[in-house]
Length: 460
Figure 1 (cartoon, rainbow, N blue to C red):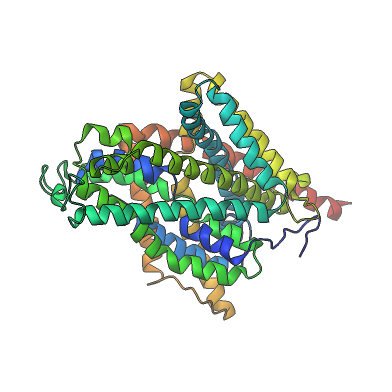
Figure 2 (figure 1 turned 30 degrees about the vertical axis):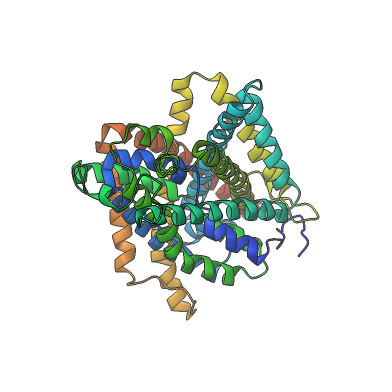
């Protein structure tokens, strides 16, 4: 399909979707942010990543079951609309869009800081807007452009992690005698495996689970491939080994080589500090390049994901009708431009708004990931009944249904409660709740308007 006024193209190739599914979730949070989790929980940070990874595996299994049966660029937002109600699809779709447009200034600024360190004569805001503008063009002309850029971004990330695991693993096994570190004694010799208790692991869990948001993008992108169901099955089944290799493998290597109380761990980031202790020359420059690629990848995906969710909302009548139009290549340019325009505004706001105001805006997205996961779980709980009743058999089925689905729902409720109790995360829950309440009101108004419009012909 080349495209029409209402249809997307199928320009993503299997290698695009495959690489997106393998490395799309890997962002700067793994290369840099994981250092904060390790500094907080010690070697037991691997437990926090393991629990967060298990949650994502279960959520992806549920989402995959629905996506295989009904591939749709609106993904979980569309499923929530069908399974829970129009208000749910409207709300979770707009909240998800809001999350990704707020990712744009974060990633653009991160890229700008790295580039400014290399070229200090150029202001960071120039780099931030420049990077955003360049990646806008990759999304504006065809989904194939997005897929090609993301393929190479993801490939670089995968190669970097594999090399890190190989070098770090060799150091752990004592195969790098000149490195200055060997063995895995760091896992136990500095206060034990869980030096700060399980409370610290829980605190690390509450922050690490948000680094996995983005895994679900493959179910959105797969709708623009030639065989979406097959791509979704492959991506969903591979999520286990991806998390085990890239996340748990990386965290194990870092905690085995770097003392959790190393004062430079959080400051330099986990990958850089591990490479420094191993004795790899130019460790900072190497990691800076990898992080730059990662943030560019995340920014690229943020623009793509926000535009496709906005397009889906428009198709369902939950956003302006003009946003559902596509060009001859099947690209929803209006949705891309609208999301990019808001992204540019947030990038500018990051530099001109008072820090407290912009921080509150960022806080509004703090718990959206959990709301997305909750919507996926409840939707799957309800859609499975309709699938079974219709006799539809899919190659993906949620394990131990409905018990694991209910376990995920209860776990998410527990995490939200814990975030509300802990002072450091309370602001994010409250800010997200305020935003969600506003979106719920908008959903109600939208439904009321639709009801009135539907009733008008009958009264005529």
